[in-house]
Image 1 (cartoon, rainbow, N blue to C red):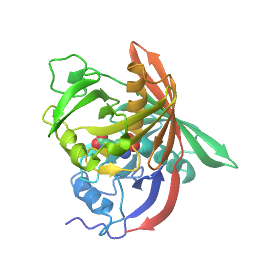
Image 2 (image 1 turned 120 degrees about the vertical axis):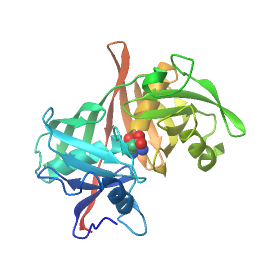
Image 3 (image 1 turned 30 degrees about the vertical axis):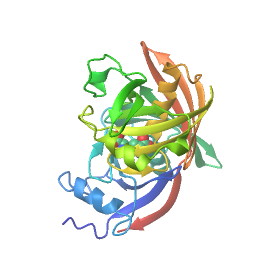
Length: 286
Ligand SMILES: N[C@H](CCC[C@H](N)C(=O)O)C(=O)O
């Protein structure tokens, strides 16, 4: 059993997607071997701090600073969109990196964060989430199709029209007529662990309100239902744009709050800027 007594952390959230964050810029606080179990303990809502994941701040040789994210089940994710805004707030507010525009090394490549300040307080974060891919081998998804765009997938007792996309981590986007009719607790885990997704997948049900607005609910890989998913919302904005359901500027409503997106085209691929808040809830010691 990993002993976390005395561990210093800050509890943060990005529109309700919440995380303990740990500064490892001055050396490992939790060993690599112990990180999965430590994250399971920290994320536990009764026996731990509670969270939809744990964020780590690390030094980087290729960017201003480094960032890692672990899910509550102990698995490491390539990227976390709500988390990187919390990360930006944390490193700025704590004086670890007092830059309003920073580059961040992640397992999904280098991302850029631009911080908007009000009275020297970080209030809004614009993140270049980078480019997506719809190529099934790169998601990864086992399919004879090169891309899986609004195609049928059999799940338990029903069939969903699903779009598979990666923004560094994998996402299944399902556009529906009525979000309230979806049993996310039944179909979320079934899609997450579907045999066609060898590395599992994050699952999002989306209702289009207009060409510039939508609302969504998420079942996250390694976490379950969350109040928001930043990479999932990014994937939704990009997928909706690719399918002609959304224009390039999109406001998405998630149960925990709203995120704004500006989809762009680059190198024959689609990327997006994400804009949203981050909050420091408290500084703590385990
Ligand atoms: N569960 C995700 C990582 C966290 C993503 C989410 N919290 C976000 O804001 O992007 C995965 O395993 O890919």
